[in-house]
Image 1 (cartoon, rainbow, N blue to C red):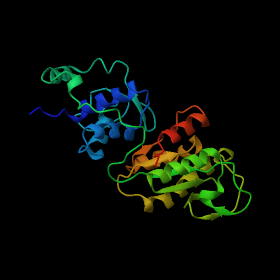
Image 2 (cartoon, rainbow, N blue to C red):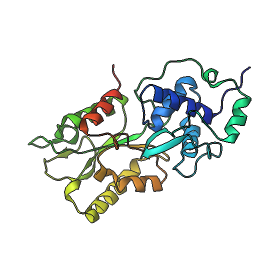
Image 3 (cartoon, helix red, strand yellow):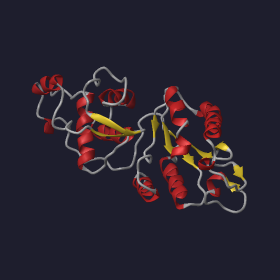
Image 4 (cartoon, helix red, strand yellow):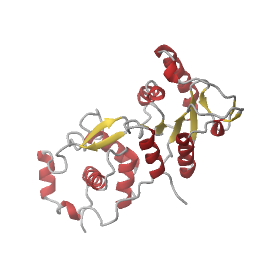
Length: 263
């Protein structure tokens, strides 16, 4: 019976699959979904620390991944293969691979998974930032914001049936069903100290809704992320920011559309 490859090797192979398919940079969830398409029993609790250890510019992680130098973090929650990683490895990697079949035989033959994200354990909690375009009359928060970007983000959350909140520059952490009056305020208009206070208040209201180790998925601009992400990570919550390095609203909307589940 052929021995199954270790997590670090499977993660590397799946990252190469994603890269060949043009899906780079990728998120942790993209990579974990790719692994689970081949090995459904491999969970986030073992894969996440391995990704951390295999990433050259991140600290910590699983001992089996530390020193592998396969991934590079290119932004919060985004990764890509380290240049040359597909062709080279550490001396230990070479020794390990000598005792194994060639890489083409390591993974079962299956198609590259579809772009829709899958979540194997606790679903992530999604935070969606408010937008400038709003209705002119009071409405439930999820109906108040009417830009195409926000509507796509709303559809994405519903398609995955994920828990979510809205990040409002005026009202802070907002339940989607909360009735709001229209307003004109963005975090871009606030000085840094007021943005810090805003983030502290959001964290105060958010913590009771988070489960231990739950991933927080932020669909939000830089000003909404800047002081939230460090606080979340300091408390041990993994953070994904898949839109952070996409150039413009068009690219962000394309990502959201691609990862929205279809009936």
